[in-house]
Image (cartoon, rainbow, N blue to C red; front, side, top):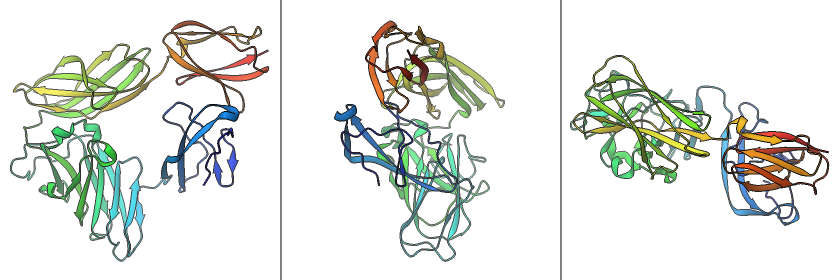
Length: 388
């Protein structure tokens, strides 16, 4: 494995043995375009400070992960006499066979459905009055593959740790079967420190998994919920498939899941068996990652939450302007509609300038830089510039 060395500058795309370099800068996501299908890729993320000969890397505890670019639906698990784990990217599901995998192995399939399960009221255990609007279906080609634990990511529901105390974990064979309360198998509701990412243990068969509510019948069946950037604003759009005794929708916003704030309210249709569509505009939330959820309140004061919608806001393209390109006098003039840090990179991917700037016109002295082509970035916006 490649461990970066202090004082060494690495270039995006540079290879070292079987390793290659990706560069993320100050962003929290990056797209790797150099991958092949059905291959395991091991990633390590190193933080750093400084530049050039004084660059310093934090190598003690890098963030690591393995991603398989599997392009088939099933996840095959071979027979084994040892504990065996399989992760299913894109589903929020991981399974660990705690002691062994039965003869013949198995193939697992997992689907996350952002809605209430079909026939969700069939055979609900006593005391459970409704089902949350996210569920999983996990199947196995081997009916008895072995005892396992499973991680299911329900964090998109947006429930707090206290709210999780009022829910039950449900399991059934299929949509024609009764639900079974498996809350006794619940090992954690905050796997990896993420509230709502749950772990169940001691299970032996696969099926539908859902969250049951003990506080009241859930008054809506959620359809879609999306957050889309419109210039400096966020357009929130959602729909319901059914409504029963629904009173209103309270829109909530956060940049951290523990700091929800109300940003507006929309009146519900009340009673409906057809799709209803709603929207609300959140004005100028600012650059960065934003989370949204809907608190649906019924006419009796009971409530439930929608799944969480996430969006990363960036400067609209027309709001990052370079005045005078190519640059011929050693002065770079940038116009920004909002305060933002900007970076200037050379063709080797090396940052030659990294500076926070105010909203409006900003003048930067770049007379010390060699002539050539550079890339200026602000958030997700970028421009190529030439220095003459």
